[in-house]
Amino acid sequence: MVANTSGQNPIQVWVRAPNGQPLTDPPGPATTIVVRTTTVNHIALLVTIGAGLGLLALYSRRWFRRRKNPA
Image (cartoon, rainbow, N blue to C red; front, side, top):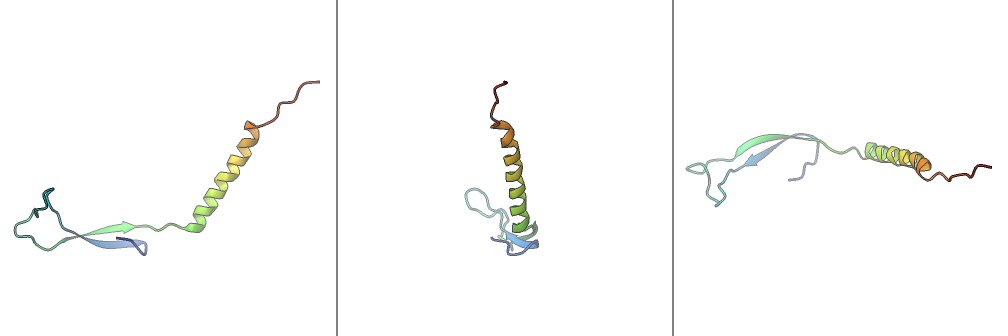
């Protein structure tokens, strides 16, 4: 199942044993559970990745700083 929108989405569930037999006798209707889903904000994800790359660039200056010989 793929959620197309965020919010509450109902899912029907049939419970079976590992051998494939239904756990209820007789097999009744599916149990409906509600799952809350969220979606990804692509703009916010790009901003976060950009900020992380910017911090990495700033810290890399400290790691790769050239040593100067004292005069």
